[in-house]
Image (cartoon, rainbow, N blue to C red; front, side, top):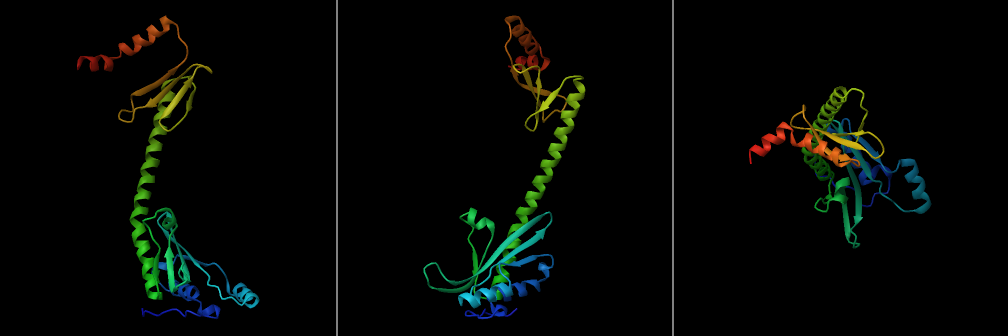
Length: 226
């Protein structure tokens, strides 16, 4: 592709830098499924220009599908810099550029350069998307496993109503003031962690609770190791 430069002082819709660039992007093989949107259309642009005598430049919004995600890229034509100096260049950016200060918009004064910058952004974002897809898959598998473990716990405690709270924990609510929080052990699905016992108890009831905890085989084994 030749390093063709846009017409800086374009006066027709067909010559506007982003309009020409959008057509060139459509010709790229990677853009087959890309959604390319201009912020204005020819009829509206010509109507506004006739009224205001001001030649504006529409912006391009690209949505590139990849796997189960989308890559969003925005392109605009800058005639001048913020300081008023001539710029005459494309500015290519993503939604992340405004969030992360280390991510800066890319620029180019040619069509070829602008398309190359867009391709660079796509290449850079693909590994992150792959990682996010893998993370979501692991999360979904973990949630399915937890749900199976919660169902198994409920089946083992016949007739007891359990309420799901956050992720790996359930609550047995005996009344408004009494309850038991149970967490599925991530390392051993056959074991359950009792995190909290809520309620008011007599000294005899406290003794019973202590007896249950103190005579637990794993507690005894742990004491013997010290």
